[in-house]
Length: 115
Image (cartoon, rainbow, N blue to C red):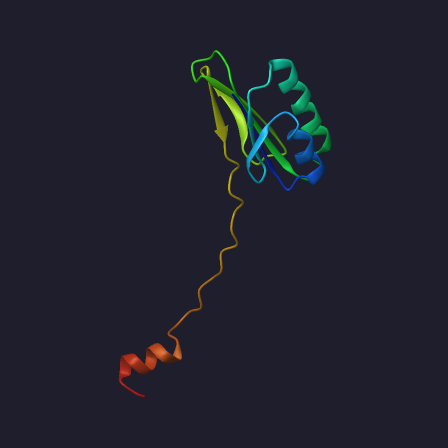
């Protein structure tokens, strides 16, 4: 079984993939092509994806029973003791805002009972 997931890719690429795979949801293609056809399709996806992202998952004879490849994806496959895992990117440090010192006017009114 082969699954290809496209995000922000040209519609022409989606049309090309429908020749070999079935589109079950927008951008999600499923089928059972041979390994040679799967490699040809993946090469076409990588060539014509432009600014889009793509993910290929296919069944294989490994411990997990499947393998996957990514193209311009934020998560990257990493081999860890024979298992392929997806590594998420580190979160960029967020800008910390310094809290204002002292009490707000509303909290002062509540605290001292003034309206």
